[in-house]
Length: 165
Ligand code: ADP
Image (cartoon, rainbow, N blue to C red; front, side, top):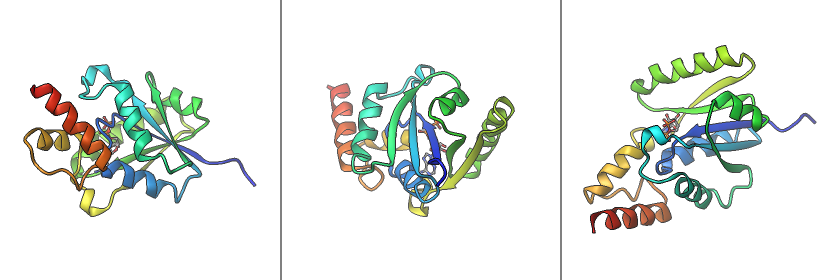
């Protein structure tokens, strides 16, 4: 038996959506283990801080022993090496994701030729879901319950309410 095949799934996860979880579950058909890499990304000025984003991912994946959650900062290829992984997993939604994702994959390949980027698409019902849209709709009191886990929904509502106090 060979060693376990580990994929890393990097992102901001601000917050984790059903699009993200759908991608991870599909990846488990191909890889033994998925390490969700939560980017510190202070330049993106995330709505949830790093600790909150990690906690929410841990809640969503608590029953999945083959998924772990780790923060990272710095180069993605260094994080891959740290995780003993040679596979970067990314999700694709619309064509608009494509240009940036291909650029990123090309850059990572030139930095680390042995690391492959693998793209998956989520179920059609999540194809238009993004963390930023979910936050925006929730802020305007729209119903986002079919796009995020109930506990994440609660946290998002609580944080928005606190902000508007
Ligand atoms: P980033 O800031 O790196 O784009 P995100 O948390 O927004 O981080 O997304 C992480 C990854 O998940 C990206 O590859 C993104 O394209 C993918 N993704 C997010 N939402 C979806 C979705 N609904 N369907 C497919 N892929 C998705």
